[in-house]
Length: 148
Image 1 (tube, rainbow, N blue to C red):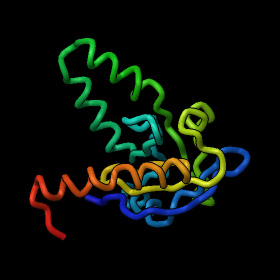
Image 2 (cartoon, rainbow, N blue to C red; image 1 turned 60 degrees about the vertical axis):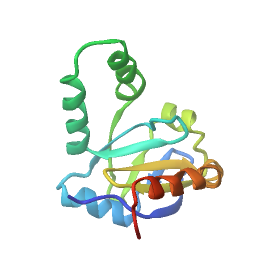
Image 3 (tube, rainbow, N blue to C red; image 1 turned 90 degrees about the vertical axis):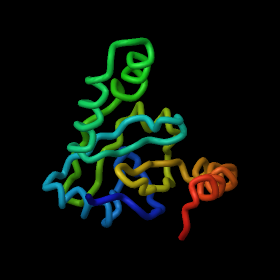
C-alpha cells in the first residue's frame, strides 16, 4: 500500500489551483488515476485528499454501518461536501471554492502526508496546530510504546 508522507509548502493560485507535490502525484499515478477526492478534514481545520479507491473503501464502510443519527451526521458533514477533482497536465488540482473558504486557504498552504490521505492546511493554522498538539502527539508514543 502506497502512503502519503512528507510536508510541503505550496501556494494556491488566484483561480484556486494547487500543485500537488510530486511525491503525492507518484502515489496517484501508482493507482493509475489522476483523480482524487477532496473533502473537509475531520477536525474542521483543514481539507483532506484521498485516492479514489481509498475514498470508495470509506464510502462502502460507512454504507454498511447501521442507520442512525451519528451516521447521518457524519455523512452530511464529511461525505456530502466531498468533490471529485482531477489533476491537470501540470499536476495541479482545482480545490473547490467552498472548501477553500471553509479551511481558510488563500495563498500559502501546507500539504501534509497523513498515511492513507493527505491534508491541505492554511500555513498559519498548520503552524499553530503543530505547536498546540506537540504534547498530545508525544503522549501517543508513550501510551502505545511506539519507538522511532
